[in-house]
Image (cartoon, rainbow, N blue to C red; front, side):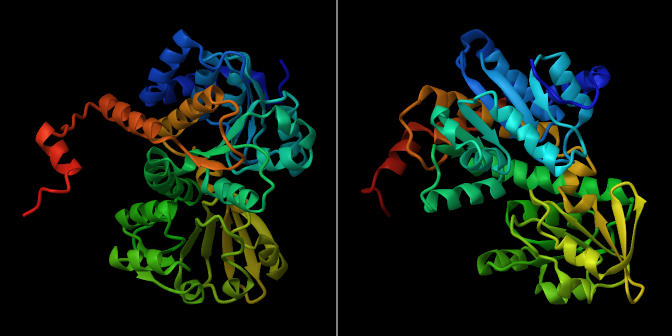
Amino acid sequence: MDYDVKDLALAPGGKARIEWAGLEMKVLESIRCRFEAERPLEGARIGACLHVTTETANLMATLKAGGAEVALCASNPLSTQDDVAASLVQDFEISVFAINGEDNDTYYSHIDSVLATRPQITMDDGADLVSTLHTKRKDQVGEVIAGTEETTTGVIRLKSMESNGVLLYPVVAVNNAFTKHYFDNRYGTGQSTIDGIIRATNLLLAGKRLVVFGYGWCGKGIALRARGMGANVMVVEVDPLRALEAAMDGLEVSTSMNAARVGDIFVTATGDTHLLRKEHFEVMKDRALMCNSGHFDVEIDIPALEGMSKNRRTVREFVEEFEMADGRRIYLLAEGRLVNLAAAEGHPASVMDMSFANQALTAEYVFNHTGDLERRVYDVPEEIDSEIARVKLETMGIEIDELTPEQEEYLRSWTIGT
């Protein structure tokens, strides 16, 4: 078994934390029990590029229980939990290539190490595995049955590949499952982003003006949680429908330039590039603070910030101070990378339970439908989504009603009126 992790001596601590996360992942646990009995992934090779966290470890264990041969690398240089990576190697005998803080060359060499295992199913978080496979290792694309994608950013990239006719195998957009983005993106990102900001800075959010760039599911969650902690939340949007929704949710909606002048804390969550750039930095108040909750570190124009600053220093772990020529100080958290994973632990396990249940069941689905899927981006089958919601409610001890025969008939009929 090949691997590249920081230190195997960290494994005991990682194993304990993996087990702790597993206590909150009851849907995935039920899938793992079935997988152990049925072995539906027997013989499958799965290559995964995901955040190497305690929750991901429980997914890897589930896939292995189903009979799959699994290799894992990090989908972000700062999101790896080194003790978890060590435990996956030592205690679960899973090939892991991930070290927290790895440089760009190491990051891509780890992706290459996963692709060297010749995966039949790819499991991605941001589409770096897929894009590398389509560019540098195109010769082995024919071996791939299908893939899955975890994030909004990755789905955007894959949809672009599909529309340009370059996507060479089917990919299921796990991100688009209702049991993923309704909960993971909104409640998971909302809580974990605020957690990352507070851990990095120890600032009081109450009374601060916090600006959220993007009012998709992630932005909604961040705004919701920030508002609940007493922040005055402002939203920057380019989509008129989302801007209108934010306004009717009682939030202040503004242009990016107006927000730049008055904001205390800025959070980007769009999946697009350079939301905050030179013209914004020029008008920000002293001690403005910026962070990113989108997948890649492109949402804040960091090279422009570096070029404008006369001094740069680290003032706390994950907090860099950039001093402008006029003496103003602007702070950047976690190098502009995912603040919730770089400065905190990412989403709580109970919400990742549903996201990774989707990953496990979708892997089973595509493995059982080898050759049946076209080279395009698919949504998660509705029956998988519904089953995950049903089991999640069951694990929470929540019961719901069923339609009566009369109600079902009424919904089927077009003749019953007033």
